[in-house]
Length: 245
View 1 (cartoon, rainbow, N blue to C red):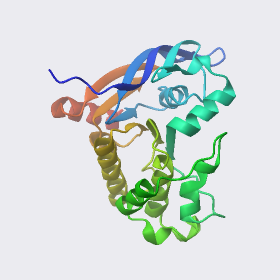
View 2: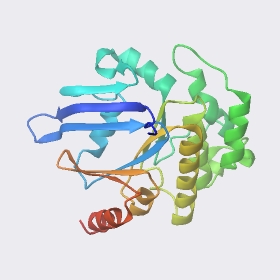
View 3: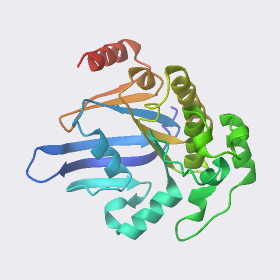
View 4: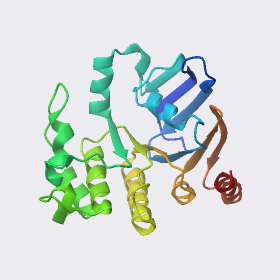
C-alpha cells in the first residue's frame, strides 16, 4: 500500500471567537500534506481568513492546536512565531505587496535579509525559479514598471526562494485577468507537485479551485465540504452551488 505524503500542517479541533459574536471557527480539524494544493472557499464571514491567520500563526485559537511539523504554534511567543514564519512559511497576496523602491530581484531576495538569521539565496534554486516563472526581464525593473502578471510571479519567487514548508496564498489571482490567473495557477500546480510543496490558497474563484487537489468549503465557521478534485461530479456540484450561493 502506498503511504500518504507527510502532513506538513495540522489544525486540531480549532475554535476561535471574537468578542461576543458568533464563533468564527468551531471545532475545525484538517491536515495539509506535502505536495498538495488546497483551496479554501466559502461565503464572506465563513471563517476563511480566520483559518488562514491561525494556520500561519498570525492569530491564536481559543481552543485546539495548530502544528507545523512537530511544532505547536501555540507554544511559541510572538517573536518565535515571527521567526518561524520567516524560516518555514511563504506568503503570496492578492495585492502582490512588492516594494516600489526595490527592483524585482531585490524584492525576491528581501525576505532573506529579514529575521534573526539573514540568509543567502541558493543560486541554482533562484535561477530555476526565475526561469520557470519567466521573470528574467523583470529583475532589474521597479514593480511599477511591471504588469500584474509579472508582479505576481515576482511575488511567487519571493515566497519560494527560502524553500518554505508551506505557502499561504490569499486570493492570489484576484487582481489578474483570467488568462494570467490560469497561468499563475498552473505554475503553482507545477511547483507543488514537482517539489513537494504544501500550499493553502483562499479563493472565491471556482476555476482556481478546480485546479487544486482538494477543496475545503467553510460555512458558518465549520468545514461543510472536504473534497478531492479527483471526484469531478461532486466537485462540479460543489462549485456550481458556490457560484450560486
